[in-house]
Length: 204
Image 1 (cartoon, rainbow, N blue to C red):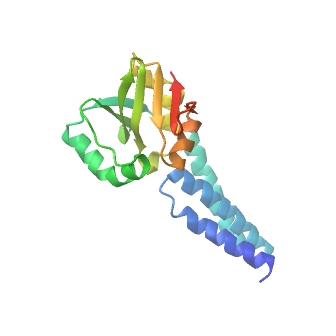
Image 2 (cartoon, one colour):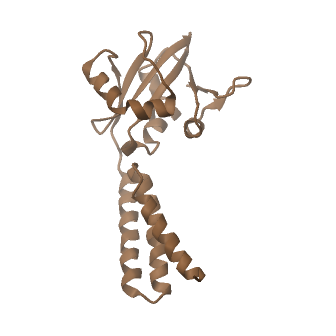
Image 3 (tube, one colour):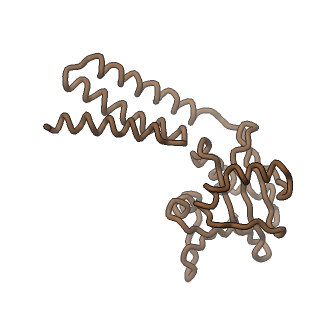
């Protein structure tokens, strides 16, 4: 096979991978890249319908990405009752993925829990506890895949709006056991603490 055939296969793989994304934003970005690649492939081999169709797909992806990034979401954080039926339902529904990211975490009475709301929909949960005066340790910061575009984390943690429900706290701690969680914390402004590998801190 020549390079053009390999390029066509690569474009197909990128489009295929995009369809496995649970995050709509990631799906659109990866599908956009695949659409551009396959459109170029179509024009290079002289197939105008293939090139035109995939160019149209890329334009549609650009349009929906523009809508996602230009739409102002209504975000809120509301304290939850750890013993409520609704919280238990949310916990059980997402238990496996929560454990995969944060480990086999047991809930205790000294923890506080909150719902992340996005456009009046429950988008995730946050659970933590005070480790010392003024310092709140985030044990779980879980957002459903469909809302995983960093908007919630940036709004409440990067920009310190979490103080609206934690007014006495001026510092956050979090522990990262997997690479994806560590990268997430760093994007939100956390820094690894000296002498404590895997433990991150951020001022509010």
